[in-house]
Image (tube, rainbow, N blue to C red; front, side, top):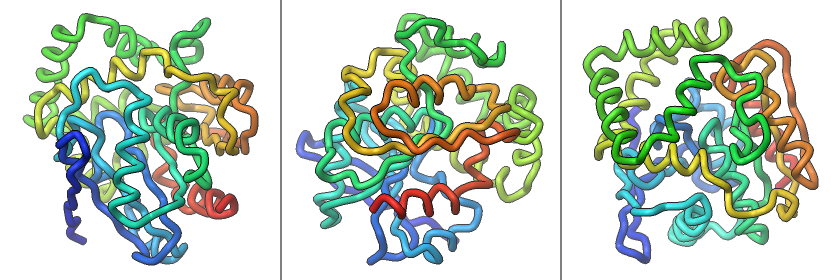
Length: 290
């Protein structure tokens, strides 16, 4: 199925790109992609959204895909982009859910837009890194990758640009290398032809406009979030899997302890890509909050 790219112009003049699928009159849900990732991330079976009666809107974050870069962007800047997109679409209230690097943006929207966000779910998302033992339980390759993010932004941008070129030159080898540092469950998913084809399309889109968006994202992920988790007033669903090498369940346990109200889903096995097998359950759980 072809994906239609859509755009709005934000108040500061930036272009924000997004896609949507499911029921046009269905329950609106904003999905926040991981890193690297883009508006192209969606279930292998897109009919899931239609069957559940939801409208899923997936924006590119600034500097990713077709969205314009935003200089000096911070985590707390993003909720205003989402509010403007929702306004442009005539959506007053909505759910948010995000995977991996998209998770902190779910928390940020819940904090900034509590009157508009009806449900929230963080899937395999990191906890703030400015805490004690932030890398505990993380696989060694992932720990190294996150620590590389502490390099000066100009140098990190060069490394990411090089990595992006390697990815585009041999995307299949890139996916094999990724599978090698993930769980056995993730490796099986990466071998699936449909999942593989989607990944080959989605991942390079992160650097379509260059490496600045990805680089800024790394810095945001490693920085303080700029608000207290205890000040989030709406319940947040937490989805984590025991064998996740990239974002271990300990990250979710930290969020569970700090957030006032959570609905926790800590599951055995799985891995960092387990959202692929659980889209339906995640969406159904969010529907119970709206």
